[in-house]
Length: 197
Image (cartoon, rainbow, N blue to C red; front, side, top):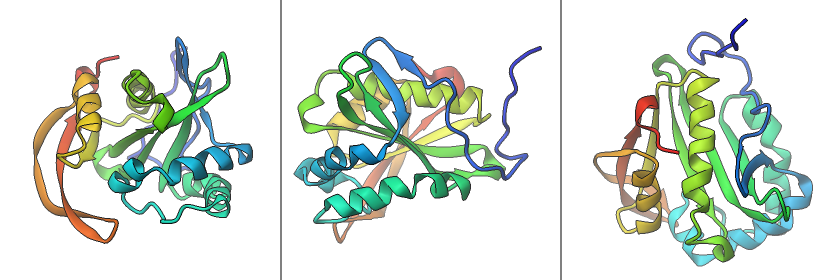
């Protein structure tokens, strides 16, 4: 018997968690846990992340992090988003995050996002973690397109998108409201046979 593919356009079931959790070398994905609130609050105070992540509260407190983690099951239940922590499976150290949001079931597509903690940047963390979730989304959820929305000046995220095979398709003017300002974003598309990693 072959594995079952869950087609998001065919059902309105809650978003499942990957099982088993994807892993490659010293990069593994896992659900967020209540004990991660300190890490998340620390990342939320990073100027670089606050500059580029839409909707990130400022200041980002420990209690905000706790509430966000506690809301993960509900977010999956309502098909709003699926967020996973990125960690080193050997040391247990948290490195960042990857997630899916903006599910459009009728079109079998969603938005892929990622970020890396300040002390884990420039080590290929997102370049190895993002394909793990993207491959699972294609193979298990049955998605046929992932989109990435990235500010043109966010060269780190641009490099990750291009390294995993995403193709730049255009510029969306004044698309996103980030830190109270309207910002242009580049739109990247990623199809299953383009994924690298």
